[in-house]
Length: 322
Length: 224
View 1 (cartoon, rainbow over the protein chains, first blue to last red):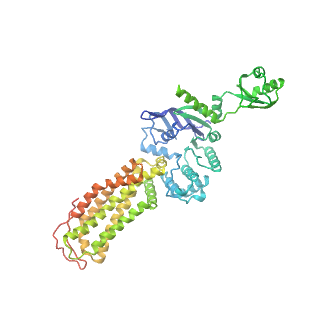
View 2: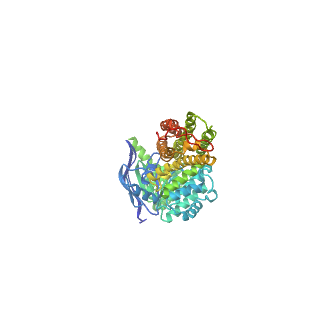
View 3: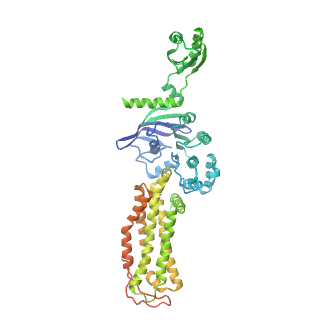
């Protein structure tokens, strides 16, 4: 990406007494990047956001957010300056339920110091971005969970932050609203906003994130979804034949570039391990045809981010047991 | 007051207006004052004994000081815990507002209506007495010590009430529990205020019309 980092964490650790929330986190997030933060419940995702947003002081390590260092040495003035450059949308919408959406946004706009003359226009822009124009005068307590979530997102957009922390932004949203939020996030990325996205929706992370980090108290891995896939899973070809092979070892086991094979889920299907699936596929087909097999399908095995995630988290669980 | 504190106070006022408990507390207490204390004082016989005067005006003084003590405790108890129950505390804490600004805003918001209402009622009480020429009320209530009590004691009681209310609210997990504990916390100063209100020496007696010199030689003093 080549842009300047707006979040830098080096060996960042947070403990609550003897309990470790997270430890030894080191990563960078650049301007205009969507950074997915994945992990099971209790992995330390929300605590990481709270530390980066200056709500909690780290126990050890250092971090910089929007150009300012966080930690116990942060003065109230520096803390205020840092929070002026960021915005957080927590998982719970956290609206004032007796106030209207507009009153909620006006209040937050004033806290961010948005000039009175600009505030009305800014609110209109944000509610339009989340598709809430017709409910702006509604009392927040009367809105459904999904609409509250959208109002909270509008509130997070209000200060036009350099870094936007989104905690499960599409939780409780219908598919249409989720799509709108994803488009909104993509638009923010294009405008240079760094987005720190914690989510359990791995399909969403896969579609949106430039890079993802898998956390379970410690960082298991960081990188673009494709790179993680390659890191976790070796390449493989899946073949499906009309009839099972009498002696698969003699047919596919002899093809150069195939390091091993195993039966697939269905009779007549096989998974072949190879570092270069695309390169060996023609040779495999030739060998199968030569052996008289009726080839139904040959495809490269694709692993979803969910597979990668589960693999990484499982590894951790196995490590934990041993 | 900077713009963030102003924003917080405005937001708190908007929430108060829509909270039935706060609205009832803010209207019921002044209404009770108007009904009980004012009725007793304005229907007072010109020949009432010093003991009756002390009882009637003691009640009026007590109401005027209960207001800045009790009203903010109800509101302040709601303040932090209400925010926490709605989940709104975290979004506010991630804004540029500093802890000091948040505390100042949270503290000022209940103080303004509590002290303001107390002063308004006191001024209205005296203005009405002056308008109908009730010198009994004016002699008893328009004293330097009572004015000082309103200017100094009322805000001090409010301050106490807000600080204890906020502390209790920050430590509680239920609004009702917080409000009950805050009400209990107002008891010690309430006892002091009650005792001093009824022991307050009367400057003298007047009449509903026309004014006549006081027959009671006692001198007013602030005894609290």
